[in-house]
Figure 1 (cartoon, rainbow, N blue to C red):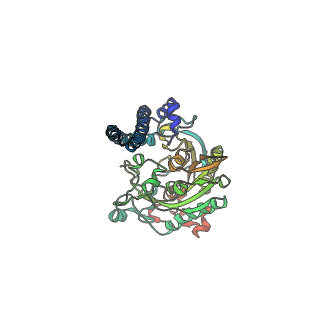
Figure 2 (figure 1 turned 90 degrees about the vertical axis):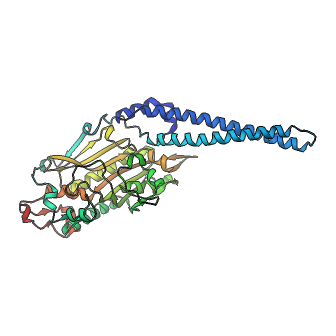
Figure 3 (figure 1 turned 120 degrees about the horizontal axis):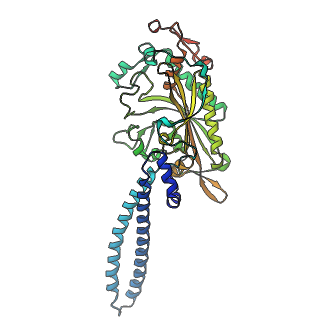
Length: 425
């Protein structure tokens, strides 16, 4: 959440950021109107409580004087105030709920240099392994189906966008996970396997359910949701805590399965395992002091770039436009892999600086002198394995139908290539 003082004192700054995101700036005015009403009600309630206390003191004093008959008049007035107070207290609860609901949905201020616009308005930073780019008519689904994956049987027993991984692809999946975890562990990241479910309070510490409702699965009859990313569980790890500044930055490498509805993506990437309901991911997450945030952002991004270089694929980094940046993030850089069959780059990882937006929602702070300040949080996909495998397969398909394993993964797989499939030559 944004600081309420920022919304009150610099509403135009918040509105301009929302315009860059292609969102309705009128929400800020709606929020301020409710905030003004809520603050006015608070003053009324405080005054009524003060008046009721004063009358209670008078009644007690008058009751001691048995000859004075004015007590009944003040008792009547006290009841009137109590009734009025009860109505105002209910009204203030209602206005507070409305106020918080809009407040939670006002996004983070986008960083000044983030381009305005939507998905197509990204800013290219750099291309890697550009000379290795090739084109092919065979997409990963055509290459893998029946041999390394079975989506047809999975659709029969679980539904569309599910899959069975088969044979050497299972080994490759775990090789990517173990390589990423080992690499991050060597860099001082603490390894964490997160819960695969979170309650509403923990989940809303990272995102608003309203914005994420088309993405996540709800467990029927329970206050539990399947996580869409380990980021949300890692963000909740220190909720409500005051961290020792000497311990910062806290750097985590979280591993989890992830579950997403992919609602609204009908017709997109329906074949294969690029856009699916269940996948594995290694996620980087950092809690740090505000002054260290951009240095930590560069660290996260460089870690992912190193991992991607080891995959021996062509890829690039791009700054997302404001309209394509998540509500929690002030700036996001995506890392995209080259897909020969599509002749285009596709998103494989995202690196985001959320400033104190998430920490305010989880009340995660650190001691700074005599005060408690909010930490800053950053997250970055180290590697999403199923999606990375689709990119590897397309780029490392050999003329004999085999799939070359990148050198960095060979000690984890135990083999240098996946045996040829004569049906795809």
